[in-house]
Image 1 (spheres, one colour):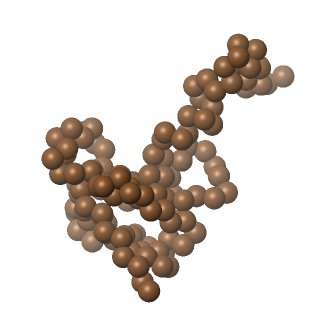
Image 2: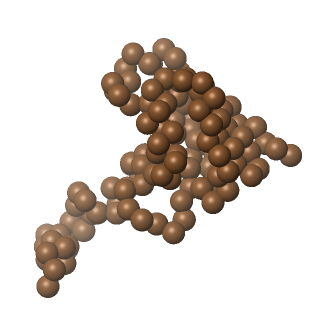
Length: 127
């Protein structure tokens, strides 16, 4: 038996099948950590409304300026403005970014150092 099976068996035996490290935890993450067949990217606006697009339709990501990313899909264009966006560019290039959240500028001081901060999010349709 594999160690993973034994660990999973122990979780079920302890009546806790959703212990840390299972797929149930992925819901709260903003990056894909494992391989999946369908990958979407969800954009959360400052007013907390959400919009998602599929990575299959991602055409290009342009670092238009040090503080801006222009993300082009076949049907939409997404403009992100903020700071420390280089890491987000890399995540988009490797298709691991899952949720990109726009925060109001007044909360920028609370952002984790080293983490990208999106302060403006504009989604436009090509039609």
